[in-house]
Length: 271
Length: 263
Image 1 (spheres, rainbow over the protein chains, first blue to last red):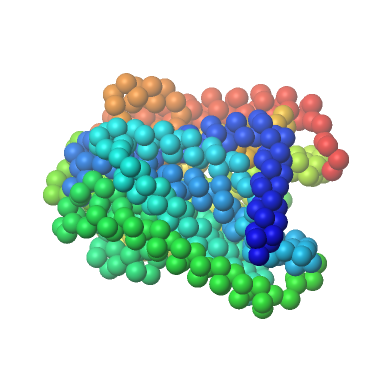
Image 2 (image 1 turned 90 degrees about the horizontal axis):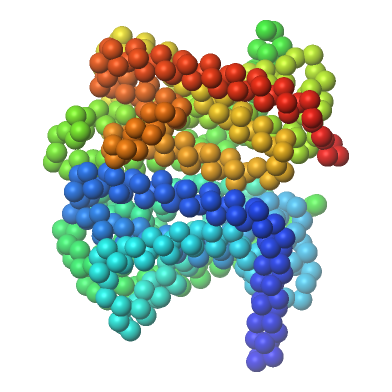
């Protein structure tokens, strides 16, 4: 048992090293992506800065509070891009016959799949995310204690898993359709819209959907509300923060089960 | 003309062949426009107007901006990049039609399809759930159509100019993303520029971007005086001429020094 864990950990580190070396081959590409992502966040941030400041508040959230919410959402977005980008292309990987190679190796397929691509480009999302989060924390005078630091880490952990679970679940559909359909556009769009602004700006039914069906409220809105003690017509108890990692682990496990179910059904694309 | 019309038709048929892509793009656009409208509704709150624009005008602006965005989807940049990388640009150059003419007419073919596929559902969704996106008057509507056609040319020329970088750079995708974000931010497609600080607005009035979205949309919701409209559409036309000249100059240069790798 211990030997297996050691073996997998060693292989995991090796996989990460390989993909890092691969990305380092093209430094200009990385620089270009950094510029692109910074610009993208500038667009999102300008929306908040100019519009929310003009109107004073958005559903009771001031500009500084939204900056905090936005930063928190950005961070888990960046982590999910770093860790889970390969789940966007399960269909493509399958059609190219890559998956057959995984199946032949003496290792867990899910593990190989999760570690096959450590996406260094995601770091270019992380940098603006960190900047905006720090800025947001300063704006709302976030008090850094041992408890709040642990809570933030738990939230980021859970939120990253929630995002990863969605990518993985929609990607796994390819096992049944055997097509190269790309859901990343829809996924990213929905998550951006539900995590960067207060969820309360949507009608009640949509809020319910993003709490109980697709639990994106736990990515940033519920924790940020609890951290800032926001009154959204009802105030969240502070322990709602700890729901994020729980929900994250739950939905990610579900998506892994879906992946494995798809894998059992899988009988090669014939390439 | 005949070959170009045929190119446009082929493009329309191939656009229809990818059913999933079509469906997902429609879903994304509809969700995005509804979400944006909720954002504006929340921002306006109980306020009736902000900076001289009423809430309903703002919602109309948003719905029409998304509609315009799907009509202004350009493929010329990716098309150039792909054909330079694959080397098929050499074959395109051998054809007895103008290569950029092919790209332009392919894009025009896409507009026709995008209108039926994306713009109509968007307008319906907008009218059903948000606000009926009616123009300020019939005259405003006609001016909007003319101005939007100008926008199309400006947007196409900018896309083509960026696309021509692929004759020099191999990995052009990040550059194109950057251009997309720049246009989104600086053209008033996401946030109207009147929310920007004054100095930034002044800077932007010297750039072509605002004439892609902000101008036709402002005409549509009727917040410009006839004089402003005439003056701005004049500048819009001048931008087409300027970018057009730049385009022909650069085009001469790149096609002369074309180097195809493999192909």
